[in-house]
Amino acid sequence: MAHQQSSQPRLSPHGDTEDIVALLAPRLAHFAGVARTEHVTRAAQEMNVPQSTLSRALVRLEA
Image 1 (tube, rainbow, N blue to C red):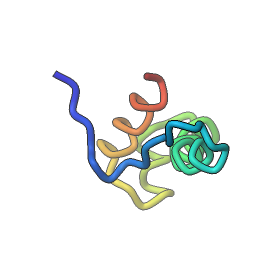
Image 2 (cartoon, rainbow, N blue to C red; image 1 turned 45 degrees about the vertical axis):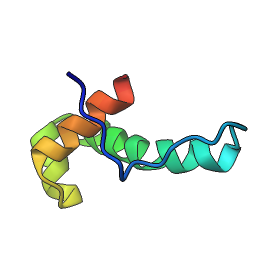
Image 3 (cartoon, rainbow, N blue to C red; image 1 turned 180 degrees about the horizontal axis):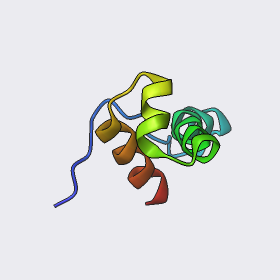
Image 4 (cartoon, rainbow, N blue to C red; image 1 turned 180 degrees about the vertical axis):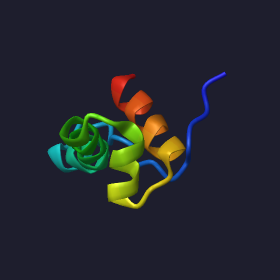
């Protein structure tokens, strides 16, 4: 069963570019942090987020 958080931005039915940016920007920032450090735990420490939160963000980006 997949868990969806209600706090995540939703795309409008019109597909506005602003909606897409609001949805992807935080996820891409997380991805970039992991790519830079090449280590999820180290990236989480640098971004001051729990490692589990970062891992879940990467899973959502992949989906």
